[in-house]
Length: 198
Image (cartoon, rainbow, N blue to C red; front, side, top):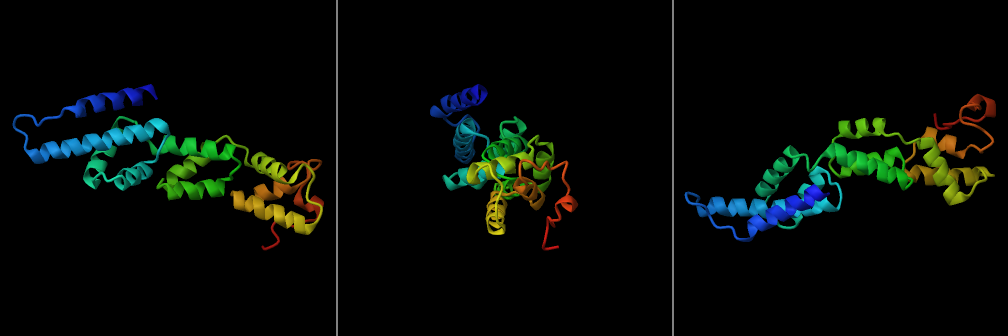
């Protein structure tokens, strides 16, 4: 973060009294000043939290920065590794998993942020989160320690976990009682079909 703040301060100081250099036209100096303003705004946004490249582009353009200036600034920031979709994706997954969201919902939200599908899949594979334990913790926090007593309650809890972004295997494992271990009891042992729609 210190590096970002120092970078923003240097850019602010340089843009305060900009005059066109000898041999530069007014159009070139205007373009450079627009790029400097866009760069200052981008670095300030990055100082608060990580952003995806596409999210940063949208924010800068929504604040009135021209598309050409934004593209030039983003290219420079990516070259300096100040903005990175990989770093953003890893941070996003970790943060949202800690909030109790599952991989399906996280994947969808990352797509909305403009992150490429390969980067999302790679980051999800590298994430050390135990999604079954996460789903179980979310279920317990919402519905309590005891497993669902009826089919209606089971369906209600399954819908909740599905909304949170967990897949059917993770939901199935989370709905098992604490006495039943996900590893020691198979679906054949319980006599239940984990995916009745198939």
